[in-house]
Amino acid sequence: MKFPSPSSADAVIAITGLRRRFGAKIALDNVSLYVPRGCVFGLVGENGAGKTTLIKHLLGLLKAEAGSVRVFGLNPVAEPVGVLSRTGYLSEYRDLPGWMRVDQLLRYTQAFYPKWDETYAEELREQFGLDPAAQVKTLSQGQQAKAGLLLALAFRPELLLLDEPSTGLDPIVRRDILEAVIRTVAEEGRTVFFSSHLLDEIERVSDQLAMIHQGKVVLCGQLDDVKSTHRRLVLRFNEPQSAPPKILRALSLTGSGREWTALCNGAREELIADVVTLGACVVSEQTPTLDEIFVARAGQKHSV
Ligand code: ATP
Image 1 (cartoon, rainbow, N blue to C red):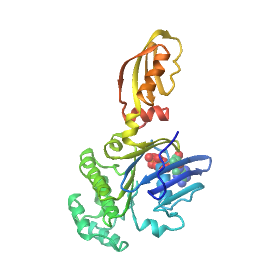
Image 2 (cartoon, helix red, strand yellow):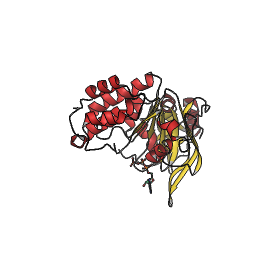
Image 3 (tube, helix red, strand yellow):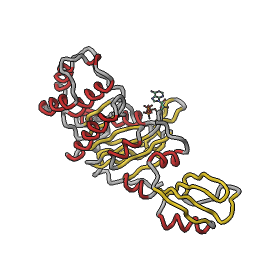
Image 4 (cartoon, rainbow, N blue to C red):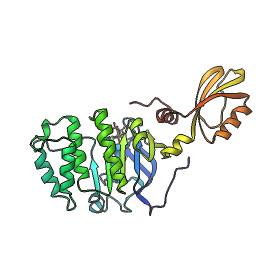
């Protein structure tokens, strides 16, 4: 499968042939990804697919066993300050000191970042409805997610890395705050890389996406291209088929007898020519959802 690979000069993130094992478990298998500046890039995969492991490599917390990882052209393991001083990170676990008050947490974090924007931090605190006097441990899971997001944003990093940012956020907050924040950051020319198991979220926010399954990238590209190059075709064959018909470019196939439904990848004319050659006609065709594409690519039901 050919994946887009802009030159490394354009890429804020460039990962090539990355592999990582934990004992016998292969967590990342020959992963290559390129994320251009100003892009919102969504990484989607089921639990245990390898998303957090990949993000840890971007932060320099794990060293590439094979392959290479570059962020702003730098190796994050060798040059952590060069990378982390320009990267805002929201961990899946939030990792906030529970004993601090919100105002103390802001002052404390500000000290690490010369470029901290106090006015912006205050705007975000108000927008997120965070009480400065509240102790972090008394905040709900959603409020802790917002506090973590505020800390990641307030020094206006060039790269925002968000690991499952939706966890704990209700759908309205997700749509009104998270998606707005992500889009604003990208509109300012900064880059957002976020992981999620929510395909609808990836679909609403991302410019580009990668689907990862059992440590392998099974699909990567511009969201619009991914959607326009996949089709669900309902087919009727002239004769009943005793075995699943061999349709070139079909990623998945269900049905029996004369009626079959194929989820295919390729140019429309080629797909139709394929099925006509097999003695079938197209009864209807639709654009599949990202969820259906993921299931067809990963070969199993996507867990949401
Ligand atoms: P989730 O959405 O559940 O957080 P994920 O896509 O982020 O999943 P990872 O946390 O990257 O997945 O894990 C990928 C695989 O590697 C899993 O099978 C996990 O159990 C394994 N793994 C991750 N970290 C370690 C570790 N430190 N030691 C052993 N195995 C690990």
